[in-house]
Amino acid sequence: MSATARPWTMQTIARRLLAEWLGTLLLLAVVIGSGIMAERLSGGNVGLALLANTLATVGGLYVLIEVFGPVSGAHFNPAVSLVLALRGQLAWTLFAPYVLAQLAGALMGAWLANAMFDVGVLQVSTKLRSGTGLWIAETVATAGLMLVILRAPAARVAAVVACYIGAAYWFTASTSFANPAAVFGRMFSDSFAGIAPVSAPAFVAVQLLGAGIGALIHRQLGPAQG
Image 1 (cartoon, rainbow, N blue to C red):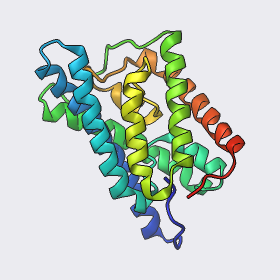
Image 2: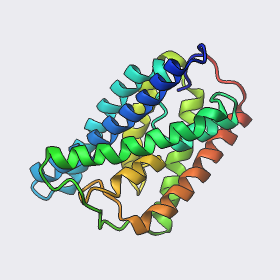
Image 3: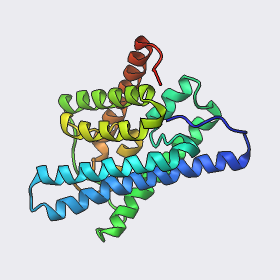
Image 4: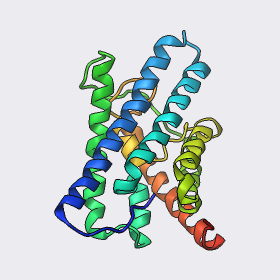
């Protein structure tokens, strides 16, 4: 998910930041909004709620990568931006603006989801997510995501990434946040998809670790084909 090289103009930079902001906003609106809807309609069946949340996230993520990928690379994720900057695929001058756009988008996506479902725009999650198993799961989820992003054929990256996240919702104990911006946004929705602020720092730390592991595995595997 790296943007094609293009002339460095203020208009180009503004468009890329707009794409990262709007894409992350919509991603968080999809994740949180579908979580709220699933919780309301599932009648207390947590497995059914997670399935609905997963399907909405897979579809939304696929569409968002297809739409915004040609503009900004569709990172929507500070860990992805960091690894791509370290690899020389994102200019360091854009790294901080990308992350700020992603965090702002995540926050506003949470607010939008809260507003759509009339649960109070300004809220903080009380859902604790802590423990060794969850931290291992987030490391694995983010390592896998980074590996998939770096190795997926360019023409199929949207489908491959979306499918991986859908699978990781179920095979990881943490339901695969795999994204520091998602952690940040989910802190502001006290819903099925939320995470309490006290749980967030450990999630972000292991996500960054996982991203590094994924990049290292990719390096050891050699150049991706296609």
